[in-house]
Amino acid sequence: MDMKLNGKHALVCGASQGIGQASAEALAELGARVTVVARSADKLSAVASQLDRINGEKNQWIAVDLSNESEIEARLLPALAKDPVQVLVLNAGGPPPGPLQSADPQAFIDGMRPHLVASQHLLRAALPGMREAGYGRIINIISTSVYEPIPGLGVSNTVRAAVAAWAKTLVGELGPDGITVNNVLPGFTATSRLDKIIEGKARQQDMSDAEVAEQLRSFVPLRRFAQPEEVANAVAFLASPAAAYISGVSLAVDGGRLKSL
Image 1 (tube, rainbow, N blue to C red):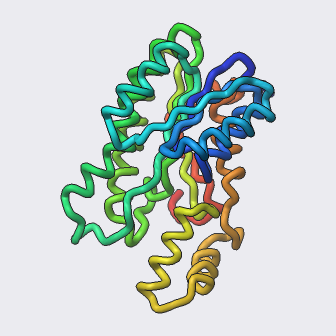
Image 2 (image 1 turned 135 degrees about the horizontal axis):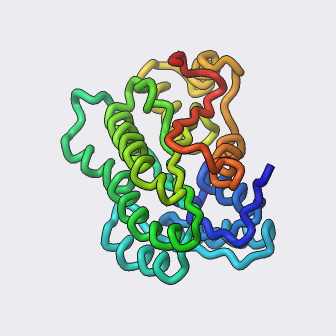
């Protein structure tokens, strides 16, 4: 099985921590040179140094707020034009929790910016390099809410579904170029995002954080949360030559939690 990404350049968004960082490390382990993107320059610098130790390459970092189109246009797009990528991992933190019925309309605009809008900017900038190289992998890290909306995450459910529809449309458009587009859907994963969700549920339900965490684990057949590295393994596989005939898939990495087929 060909899993090597030597000679490939990957751009990973939201890579300063959690699933994004783990994905960058997994791609580096396969031999890719990686550029990591997030808001925190200090964290990104540390991640890039760690990647250097993994793959022996000079990996790069770019501090950008993906919700800010001006920053994307000034910092990210020129970098992609100068140093094309063959693997694009799109990942951003989810919108704040809350019921859909009381959400402010502005919350949808704010939620779309770092997800759908930023993804479209990066897609347009990355495609020329993918086509020239004859190799392209676009991977969205979104959520199991694409299949089953998660209660209390109304805006997030809506935004994630929009990204999934965007990706599915691109499958047909980019397939003739040999470029694949896939989604990875993390379930409950041990990240700071899950910590915040647990804290919020604990306050709402008058429970301790530990009780809420145990309740969530009980919904998962494997009875545990995923580690970021386990989600990153799926990202790395879909980025590899071995996954060349897989496109248009939304792959749940959720320990079997989803009830839908």
